[in-house]
Amino acid sequence: MQITTAVRRGVLIVNIAGELDMHVADEFRKVVDDALEKTGVTNMLLNLEGVSFIDSSGLGVILGRYKKLNLLGGKMGAVQLQPQVERIFELSGLLKIMKLYATESDALERV
Image 1 (cartoon, one colour):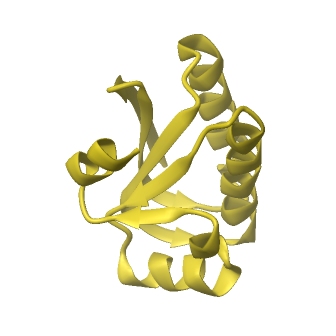
Image 2 (tube, rainbow, N blue to C red):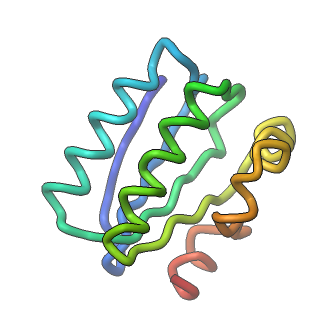
Image 3 (tube, rainbow, N blue to C red):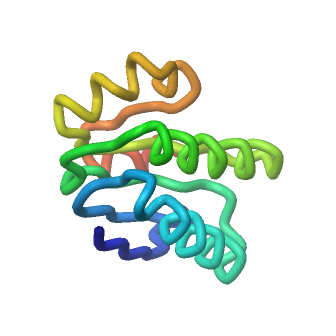
């Protein structure tokens, strides 16, 4: 898995490529938490274009970051989900608490 972060318009954008599963969930948590602490932003956008698989550990770590941001009054969204990942988000209920956007630009305009 590869994770990169950047801040645009006061939103932490997290680009993920590979599989987000139990083998990399802790690494994801650390990278994202460090970036949130370092930047001080409270809104986050996950770009999941490169994610081919996600399991319950991956969902759990995303939910944990959502809860953290929610406590700070922030929001989380996602863009460019692969169909199989979007289906898992839908079945897990994440789409009830998190918005999906077509593109990063669209998300940045609305957050």
